[in-house]
Image (cartoon, rainbow over all chains, first blue to last red):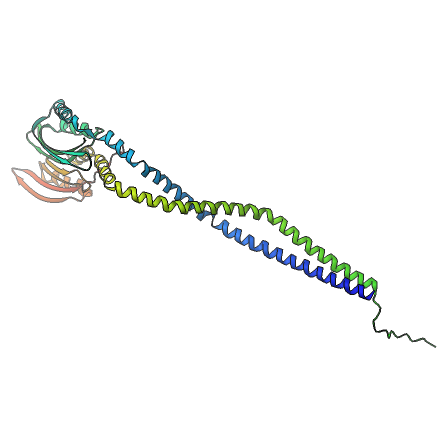
Amino acid sequence: MKKNSVIIIYILVGLFFCSLGFFIISFTYSSLESISVMSFQSRIDEYDKKEKKFIELEDNYKEWGKIEKTYAQFKESYLIKFYDYPDFRNELRSILSQNGLQLENMRHKYLNMMDDIRKVSLDLRLMGSYMNLKKFVYEMENKNKMILFKKFQLNKRDALNVEAQISMEVYFVR
Amino acid sequence: MMKIKYNISKHKRIDLVQFFLYCFVVLVLSVLFLFIGIKNLSSKEKKLREAKEQQELYRTKLNYISKNTREYHREINAINKKWRNKVRFSNSLIAAKTYDIIGKLNVLEELLPSGVYIQGISFKVDAKSDIDITVVADSYPNLFHVYKNFSKYDPSIVSESESDGIFTAHIRINLELKKKNEKK
């Protein structure tokens, strides 16, 4: 009986310490995991920010990928074909005369820009009423093509008319 | 005569009831520890597994992001290098196209009081926005009124003259060209 009791005591003590050990380990393990998860959860915002930034970068990358097409579209839409230059000159004269402006002098200067783009600088000396001049500027300014006013000089000629020295730049594509 | 009892045995006899009671308590405690440990693990396991899956998903995403970020930056830089001048040139044209010249002239007209006329205007159509104006007024108070009206455009009087009661002034102002709404 005595020997059996000792064996039972050993078994029970062993079982007790094993279960106590298991209990402590299970709590430690789950606490450590919880801490790791909580630290991850606290960084979720940071991850989301990174993801958002990456999406922007990806969009940017896609846009850059389309640059060749976009540039071609820009030239197609906003630059005048150089072989249409005579038409442009006729149109300019027609707009001037429609607005009652007298073209006293027109000088052209040609300059090759990058690739196949050509710039024509126009220096105009016009005579007419201030209102008509404004109409002309408005009409040219609102054209879809790259017709840019660069310099303006208006001087009163007489009671009704002003003399305008206008520098413009028109961009063409060959 | 009273009988005296001495237990002189080397191995005392065990109180079995007490012994098994202790054994039972130890056994119950051990089972309790085991039970609580298992329950603790099993209850947290689901949450932890979900969180870990999410964490893993984020980790995979982050790896993808960091790998592709480098790639995208490299490619964007390469494209940028090739197209930088063209893009800059196109943007400068687009920016120049948005300058509102009519708006500028309208502002000048609105600021002129009666009895004052513009004799000359000169400006470059660029971001600097300096405008040279020559105005003629029929009286000095009217001319002074012009200075007052233009005061918010940082006017500087370049010259001023008087002849036969007509006052002429050359003023330089800084009227910022507001950009029109993008129409392109």
